[in-house]
Image (cartoon, rainbow, N blue to C red; front, side, top):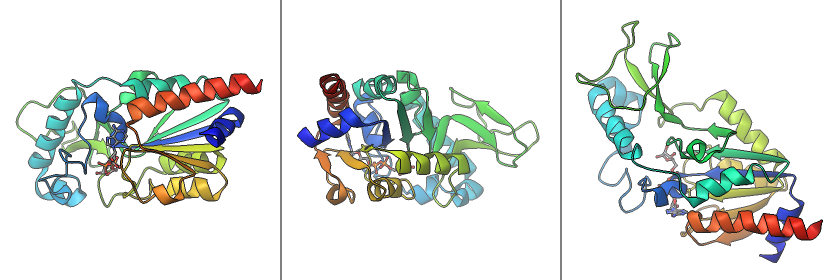
Length: 247
Ligand code: APR
């Protein structure tokens, strides 16, 4: 913790990569946990372009169900602390794999959504139509665009490329970070997890927040085995104290 305090005090750039675990204490299921979305369901049947092509109604039912679950969830103290951190450091990058919008709901302004947003839909034909959508679609599913093509959730499915702007933002976040915090991700999905490795290899002090071990744990300079709603506010307090002490 002493080294972490020192690094936080000096940090000009702090980058944070979040995953489903940071929303767990808001009541959002993770993907691979005991009650996770992928327990008893096959991601291949629900979150791939092939699944959408062969059964768009099933895919839409899954996403509308998730949206109705998420509509009841509110940001937790981890999300709020990250929003506060934005105002405490010269530069902060927040890269999230989450599609739930809870970082923005907590007040974070600069958020890169690597895997898109569950609150947006887009036309599959590429006619350019995008729509914000908070409520489930009325039957019959799947919904259609005015151009006649199917509408789809504006998320990144398995087997799809990440948006170029998201990749560029994550690359910049990793390379420029003095401290890189990776919180609430199993770090098994690429390329997201690789940005923590890139950050470490380009000189960042790598901190992992996760109650469980991940493939990144052995690489991390500091590992905090606590839920993020407790650990992230502690880190933000540590930055405040150590920065004030260093002035
Ligand atoms: N605080 C911090 N971490 C937690 C908490 C918590 N309260 N609860 C659980 N975790 C950790 C788990 O130990 C696990 O390592 O969060 C991690 C969640 O891992 P996953 O369910 O695999 O979620 P994530 O890493 O975000 O998945 C990546 O996979 O299915 C795709 O596109 C989806 O963005 C998602 C990607």
